[in-house]
Image (cartoon, helix red, strand yellow):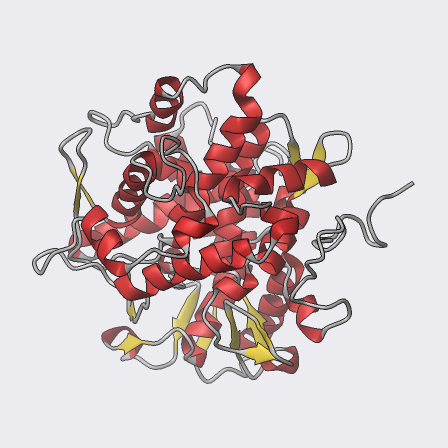
Length: 434
């Protein structure tokens, strides 16, 4: 008998008798927006609106998809000659700082030092991996052009996502998220709820000459994370620990298999209250969801950081023996590198010639439209990349196309076109979206 409601696995966060109930009641109109299917379908509506010429903001040029796909395929072959591309996830940033082009496997070193290597520790290792990656992803919004992190392991100066990743890894390894003395490798709700900006500033080497964008926003996210997980024992246990998410997901796996859409849905529902209240629908905050006139009900969800988190959970879950299926239910991530790649290749062209000269806010219709076009465009580019490489969707899901891939190609084209490899235009960041 199917243990899930009609339609397959669904996030049943109130099904263990804990007394805690989902913040999104069944049948609530917000529920339909808390899934990757809504991201893809509503972005497609916006893309059709632009393609039909109705938009006053952008024009759409699908004839450019072939050129983008060829550029991405060439980037993949340069970086992964054997085409063995890992998932696009936070774990790639933890590997930064090795000599030359080599990777530095901080995670393996950390596990070996903690005596957590080997198959007999795989479940606890998964919990520790989840403890590490959730706060690290929440800290991954754009750092700004002036911030640097001196990596103690390599003495290299790391920037942007790599610097943020290694800084958060080091903070975790020192017990920065743990409430248990003598047990540093964990992330507890109690400790996260007490996180302040000064702690992050110290850990991330922030100073007047080394400013980090959105410092207060990042600290606020971690505090809310701690409060939310303590209020969600069905998922995170008592006392609340982020790594207990593994046990929740393992319990809902069928024959060791769990759908990526279920993982995402669980995160969107369980962690939804973490995000700042922006757009709300009947009292429910929709997180990374914004208004656009072409979309049904005027709302377009993206859930960029939550999808990035879902991608980043694949490796610890698989390390523990779970098989995550349906990866292509998730969408591409509409942010600077992916969206910058498509913008630089003129897949979408702003009607305002001065668009790139100013600084924009994340809720502006022109930014919402650019992000929606990015989601649709990444699906089209992924198809072209697979054709160029001679691989199948099963062997080369979107998670590998992004890593190989569109994100790296976005950074590559930016470096070719602008000093310092800056994005093609600027968006004001509060540390909670980009």
